[in-house]
Amino acid sequence: MSLLEIQNLNKSFGGLSAVNNFNFCLEKGELVGLIGPNGAGKTTVFNLITGVYKPDKGSILFNEKNVEGLPPYTICARGIARTFQNIRLFNDLSVLDNVKIAAHKDVPYGLLTTILRTPNFFKGEEVIEQQAMQYLEIFKLADKKDELARNLPYGEQRRLEIARALATKPILLILDEPAAGMNPFETKELMEMIEWIRSDFDLSILLIEHDMSLVMGVCERIYVLDYGSIIAEGLPEEIRNNKKVIEAYLGEEVE
Image (tube, rainbow, N blue to C red; front, side):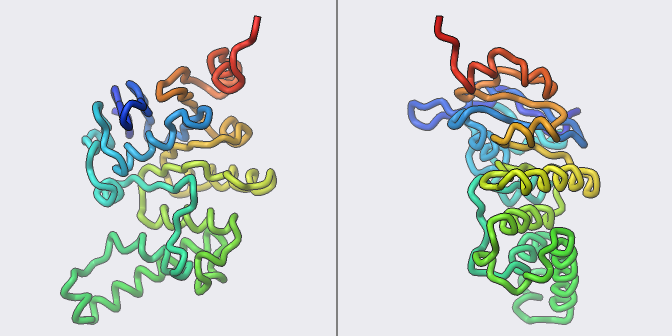
């Protein structure tokens, strides 16, 4: 069975069909890309997978269990983490606290322990802070741990968002345009980081990205979405030369 299997997924907003009969699969350990022109429905698909939206029709199986329609916190607890097209950090909290919040889904104590501030609470908090610092060190943000998230440069905010997602200990990491706003040097670093994350954390990764050098450089398979429907699926070289894909991005040739 696939790690993530989507069948006949549909989502409409009023009279607009944003996702139409979407079918998709991702095997454990794969790095798969989802691309398409602006407005094709890519982020809507991510929102359906992660519980931000509820599908009108269709099924989403993760680890052979239905997750469609579940709230985001439940889907996160089952092992799916994501970043966002527009960075969504807790801007008025410190860099360290941003990561600690993600790690708190696995706290070894309950509400009463938190209120009473028992020794178990402080022991649990110490473990979580150590874990959070490990992620900050991996992403070269440990020296910024006390900075407010809003004060980080753009590239470091992107790294912090990925670190926060990884702190939930996911099985599947979903990245929504992680290279947006980056220069070519930063994009190259990001490409290397994505490949390293998959290997070192033993993850499967689903990636939306407009930077074709990044997509073609790291993805093993690519799906192409246009007007909410899949128009192509295959290896990077197959997608690069697919006539339907070229027309979706550049338009049809005028005779």
